[in-house]
Image 1 (spheres, protein in one colour):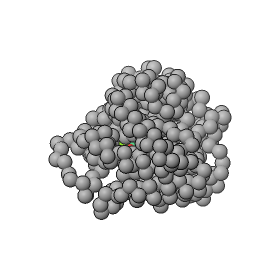
Image 2 (image 1 turned 90 degrees about the vertical axis):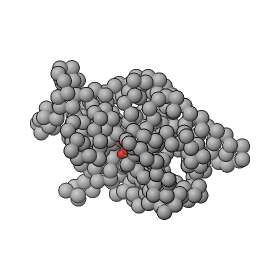
Image 3 (image 1 turned 90 degrees about the horizontal axis):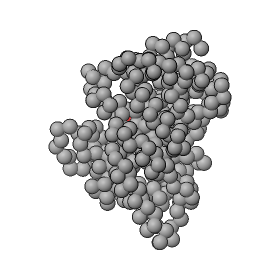
Amino acid sequence: RQEQYLKLRDVPAVTKDGVAVNLQLNAGLLVDLPHLAETGASGVGLFRTELQFMIAERMPSASEQQALYSAVFAAAEERPVTFRTLDIGGDKILPYMQAVEEENPALGWRAIRIGLDRPGLLRAQVRALLKAAGGRPLKIMFPMVATCDEFVRARSLVERERAHLSHHGHPLPSDLKLGVMLEVPSLLFQLKEICALADFVSIGSNDLMQFLFAIDRENRRVADRFDPLSAPMLRALKMVADEALASGCQATICGEIGGRPLEAMALIGLGFRSLSMSPAAIGPVKAMLLELHAGGVADLIAQELEHAGGGETLRPKLLRFAESH
Ligand code: PEP
Ligand code: MG
């Protein structure tokens, strides 16, 4: 199997009916970067910067952060990398940071909330990213954004850093794109506005599932109770795909569902053309794409979503479609 996937490495990810799909990797450490060449992925769609912080014994200094980002740029060569700013708090604890006692850490002080409340931390990271990019294009996205206002505040912090570096004669990124993770359901109800503001959106389906269905993603007892292929989740995803298309804002899926072939098939049917996943998932997803008739699955999903009654799952029908094609 593994060898079969290896053979697909340089085969373009295009469906039978000619739909090209951008397949990227999720990464978090420098050791993940060689997977780019091994899998033929087109770039890093999600670089989880908190990993460096989580494995360190103390807060990484600004120059340590910059050194990692420079090394990531060098290892990615010409391929694009989307860096996500620190996504700490919740289940991602830094041993050296004073723990805050919270009843519900997943709903607590985390990710961009910390970044906006402690701008020194976010500013240092953004500066490290801007410096590491040098003259190359840079993509940054912010985790757990719940309102447009949070994005605007994060963006102005980046703009201030860029102006500061420019003032001091540092080379700036040749192109700077700022995006937003869509993983808090409140953003679903600000889609038009956020798509107008952000250069791209990236759906964190792991957290979006958690918050849409109110199920702790780490709690096995409840985590698998609801299906990402059920009508409510597919409708939520469809809202994003439709708005992205209408507004010309790029949309990617970087949660686990993008790396599962059946789910990935459904995502293509919904209109997504960019997926970011774990390295091991690239081969199986590409193999699926090469056999897929995207128009067929799009028709099936549109029909089913129109008629799906309640919270029912489309999984059996999608599976049947996959098997018969
Ligand atoms: C997600 O929530 O789907 C995601 C990609 O981010 P993480 O798993 O790191 O929370
Ligand atoms: Mg997340």
